Image 1 (cartoon, protein in one colour):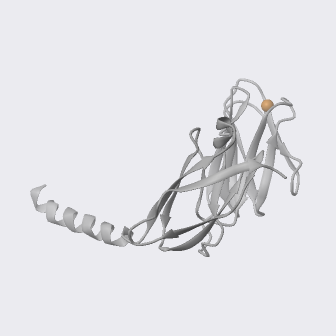
Image 2: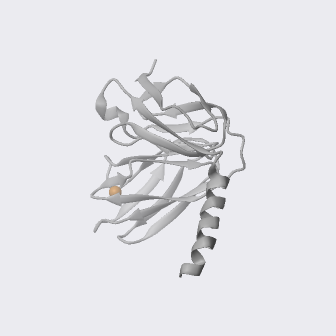
Image 3: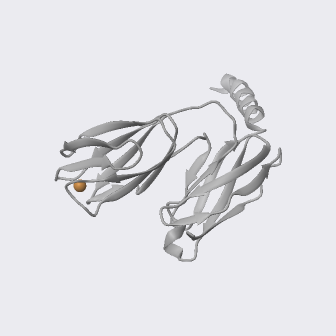
Length: 194
Ligand SMILES: [Cu+2]
């Protein structure tokens, strides 16, 4: 083991050098009512980077879409799982509407999201269930937690415009700068629509 330590140290140094120019941007979403700090999607509007679509998961647990809001990059897939002992359905009336059908516990169905926008996810079996898939044209995005905190990871140095989406509120764009030294925490303020 001892002989491998220099190699390990070299590898760590290399990793550090590779990541030195990217920074994490932390921030907080502020809202007039504390409960609305959560589930805001904060995203970089102008990163200008290669797309990197992924598969993201949304579950149905205890008759609730969990998480309530998922954000994905345009071209990504969302896998909808049913974890309840009752059948659930997933459909949206938004954008190009779809209905994925109804399926039992333990099964999943996938949907591709090729267009940007905010798409409600609803269930024909349970009228009060609602979740959101928010599709952004960006590789840098985050959903705020209960306290309003969010983190955009791995931003290269540069000036960026942050946009925000919330199911009930709106917010102005915020300009931020990431330098080799990192980025100052940012506050994104939500306000009532109109
Ligand atoms: Cu349901």
